[in-house]
Length: 388
Image (cartoon, rainbow, N blue to C red; front, side, top):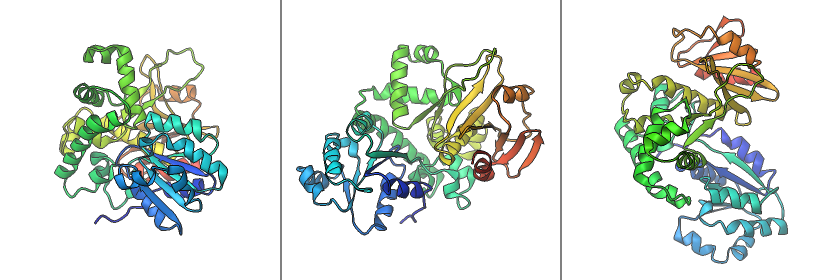
């Protein structure tokens, strides 16, 4: 039996339930939403957990309004809530009848039904929190950085006894997601083509999107590529990072950069099963960049994220904007890789006082005015000091 690993989300979840009648904890399948909710439930005097994938729990909700009204003074957690979108109207009625914080905790994997129904029916009554797979600050120092980066953060993948078991789990996750989850979320997409498309995205990981080029490679229209990407984005498999909007005479890249959000999935799609295989693959630099981007997204979930790149190739991998402050991030596997000569000019264009060069290697030092070397383990504290 695996030991429960505390999630950084716990404090935010507790605060949201103390303020809102309903809280939606959304995120990809198998990322730990149910585990977190059940652990949270243990510390509540009155709590009820309903799993809508359970026929018995579904039967209890045959007359949902009557049944849930009997638990008006309990925290009711409803897992896989997107399976019963009609519940949202009932929840609104119940909340308005007896409105107090912490009535409902809704778990879902971000289907269009969940987002649309809850926003229409529970506007002003619900807070959204996004749970990701494990990130570095949650599992360090017990879990080596190389293991989290290589296997990704999905609990069953990360905590597998051997690399082969982790790789096998990710393969089954990919198949199940394409064959069962996407159709279950309301997407009618061809499974074989989607596997090929997802694998192609793994090769483009960390690059600016070229919809026409992707469409030509898949022999489909730009509109189809956008629809497939939207499905993967809305189910938390893909992150589209927008370009920073700045007033400049330079020609800027206007397409978003695309990352597959979990590096373990990237590596499985590319059939990279070992650490040595990853280190010898051309994707390794982009993989590290995506790993850092997701780490930052978890460390400062309320920040705006973007990137800067000109048509001439000057770029900054990640721009973090929070409370009127900006910090730049450059992702390097090793500080031995030289920084771009265009970097100072790019920092001026982006109005950056500080840029952090994030590497997997330990150590912090000043490289040049405004540019600091920062290890991943020191990133959380450094961002807190810079962004408040």
